[in-house]
Structures are given as C-alpha cells and as structure tokens.
Image (tube, rainbow, N blue to C red; front, top):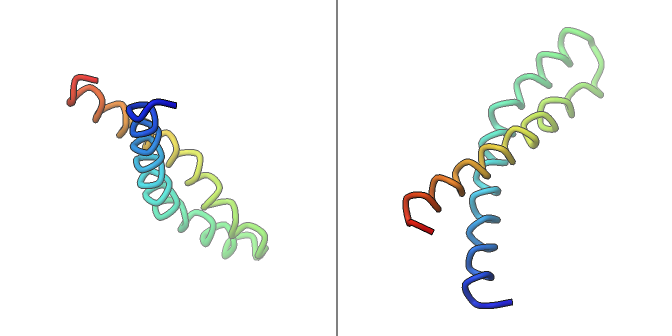
Amino acid sequence: MSNRGQKQKQELEHYRGIGMAIGMLLFMPVGVVLFILLDNPGMLGVGPTMGLAVGLAIGEGLYQRQQRENGG
C-alpha cells in the first residue's frame, strides 16, 4: 500500500473514531431511559449500539468534509 493510501486510511479511522465517540455519548441516555422505563438492565446496551451506528455515519461525514476542503 502506498504511503498516501496509508495516510488516507489513518485519517478515515481517526474521523470514524471521533464520530463513534460522539454518537455513543449522544445515545447513551437512550439506554438509561429504556432501562428505567422497562426495568430491564439489558436495555442499557441499546443506546450505545444505536450511537455506534450513528457515530460511524458522523465520522464518515467528517472524513468526506475534510476531503472536500483539502481538495482530495
């Protein structure tokens, strides 16, 4: 793999990581609310799971925006 391709992969992973952190933090309260409402501790995992999916989309969007701004 070329040095440029490796750098792009690292940037993509960086932005996906940021997006996943944002998504999980935003959706964590959803799991807590479901746990309280349904009185089922298994529902705590629903929030971060939804946040992970949304966070990957956020990270991909951040990466695409960065690519457009840098002309690459």
